[in-house]
Length: 462
Image (cartoon, rainbow, N blue to C red; front, top):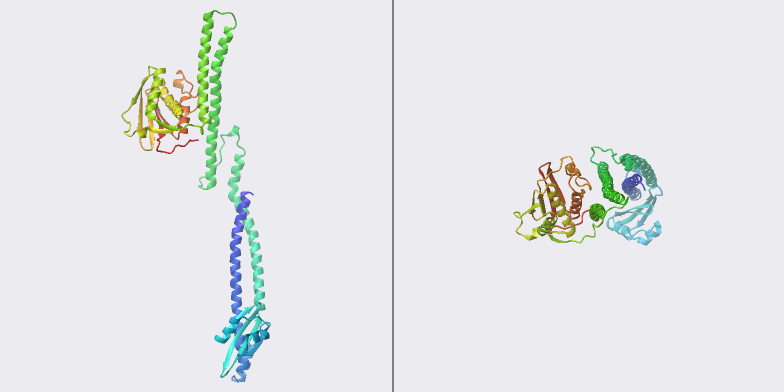
């Protein structure tokens, strides 16, 4: 069922239910009012019947005739019964032919007046007492006018109820359509958006309703999708280019070497060139595999407690072996007294890769100038701050540093593939952490890795 029809149906059901309750209350009150009014009429008729039978001689002729003229108008199916007070209930029932309850008989004796409705018949009774004599005066009648009026009322209420439902249905459909019209426009617009026109956006308003929030949310999703497609496109183009270069060099060198017979020295030189390009290709493929691993193995990580200060020392030792000329220094001044504040929960191998990427970049892009590594901790997080004195990142290019294969224009002469920061960024996200980069062109860069410590709940971030 469409939302428009569902809203209309719910609206009709709710209002119809309210009206049904209100109309039922109206009918009940009208019925009670009509019953009470008829009992009052019947009581007056009972009094008149009593006077006409037992007090006729006490009244003047003219007064009695006036009383008859004004009030002695019989009610529908009116019947008058007079019983001696020693008459039993069964005798009264036998005479009136109605199943009169004992309570009615008791009220007639004790209260001198009783009234009751049995089926469609109304009964009113008086206990008339004079000197040593007493009689029961009972009148029965039917409220045919009341029944007719209530019948007309219930027919009117049913008609109004059905008419109201019909009007509510059309009004509900109209307003539901008007209310959901912006949603229909959103659906129509969304159905036109394809990969070729991801730049298009939904029209938004300044209203703070749910539909405006939906449009803004969808536009945000389109922004992320467009960015993802652009990054993917750039990634594929750059990966193809980077993979093609060493393959082209390998094929070119082997093709030239096979054109004619060559000396052992020439073959050795060709093989050395092939080895260089193969190693370059191997490093590039390994970087791609590491980057893909962070995409596919999010739920399969081995999580253990890691002392970051010990890991930094290990990474420093590895870099010293590869690049003995580096000037990476570890600042111990801000180390906490409590060693537990240096512990994070995470995957040892991935965090090792992230730290190695940051420290290697700092040393590489600063031409082996001094690099300072500091650890700043508190109860919530652990920050590793790496400060170098390198070439920095141009302000207009810093927004692209997390794109794979992207390299700033001022470092393209430095060996690398543009995987370091993108891979580190993904590793930090996997560990519920963040990476912050502040850089000044030609002055240096500060990279801060922020981890939640082991006191914080670890969760794999998507």
